[in-house]
Length: 415
Image (spheres, rainbow, N blue to C red):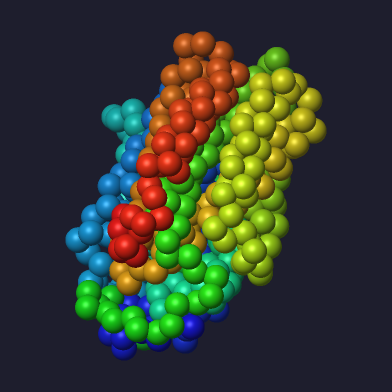
């Protein structure tokens, strides 16, 4: 472990690390319930597939903008206080959603309930920008190499654990009541606030943090910038595909042609989360994959394969296979970018903000494109878009691989 300045946001994270993993689990649970329910809640309010896409796109778009502000302007703030305030706003916004879906509210409300839901989703996205970058930076600061990998692995396992059970629960509850599913999300987020309140330490980031400890033997400074950019492009591409699946696959499954239920969609997303859990546990324990380009390329090929499987699927088990392939590959790409993104960096909140911004941008593109293609072409058209987008991403990575030479990697703080 690399020692850090006593004023850094992250030096005190070890005292509350286990509790912070609980915080990540609970927020992920609440998010998972919300995300799996939104397509059906919006459809229940007479919204369209395009409205579903707009909801997710605006939600992730404002999250992306907030992450940029956090990373480059607000990294000096007290992390625990910022996280608490962000969670409070989410609690209020989900409470507002509960009010929107109540029949009595819909009868007396003069505003379009679909756009009220979208507006509240936008508010939740902004609040998440005050949650995840600070939490991730708090946990990772002062660590490099295997220690950093292990810590990030535990964090990934924690938040994805919440994502395993929440889609299944959300899918079951949304079949019964929109109000019930939103109330379940509210419970998880309230418990998250309680857990944050029990963390300890004055947690700020020092702009002048010094780091003079020896570099771990599995850290390759010469290749870091090259791998960082290839992983970043990979993350953008895979999150486009995740955005397509999150926003449009549920609507495809419940169409009369296929005839599946909302809970079946929840099961599909649960399979994605189970694959995430398995891969995060493995990447957090082992580090042999560090700076191996074949691993990143192989994971991306699997993402494309998952899109192909969806295009040729009609039976539920086939969608389960596609979900397992997508979750396995997406989680490895996520873990790779998280590792390469923060390795060698002193300003961890900025690095985490870039990580979150990249995946948010992918979700925005996938959500908007998916909704448009679903409405104007077909329910399967979004997944052709995912394949084409990955083709462009592969070309960009080839350019990066040959354009960035090892001799260029002189600044570990390069974007």
